[in-house]
Length: 199
View 1 (spheres, rainbow, N blue to C red):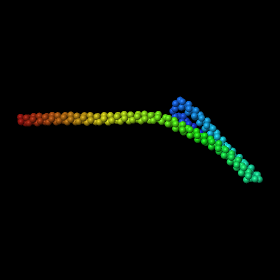
View 2 (view 1 turned 60 degrees about the horizontal axis):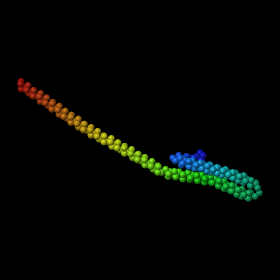
View 3 (view 1 turned 45 degrees about the vertical axis):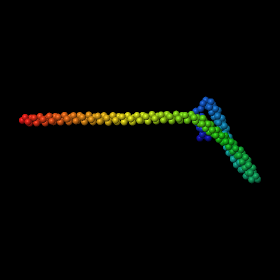
View 4 (view 1 turned 180 degrees about the vertical axis):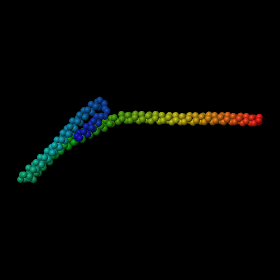
């Protein structure tokens, strides 16, 4: 993956934050500046790396050439000085590119923090609205559940009243039936006694 992709992802995340039209224009300008400086930083880093590689290859060639000369050590010392100087310059370029990149990231982080701080009241109001909505839904749900429980209790009470009334009606019916059966038995026993007395 390219070295620039985390940078792009970070900047895209920053641009995704909701802002006003004026803020958007400022953000676009700021982003253009960051992109330009990021490109400059990458050029410096690549140039520095390339110069380091070039310095190493030149030193190796110089060291080979020095071994063929009469004053080998003097030649090697001079080649080492040239290598050190060119390597240091190349490293400075690369470090300058890295410093620019770090500065850009620092500015982006600061910008992100400022946007987040500016949006904090709106996010807090949104959070409070969601809490109020959730609280209202919970209250409504609790009231609905309480109403359902009360309805169950009422229906259970009606059911037990109905059962008691049914049981009482059945008991009266059975008592009336038993009284009727007892009256028939008594009547039948009387007839039987009258018939027997008549015989």
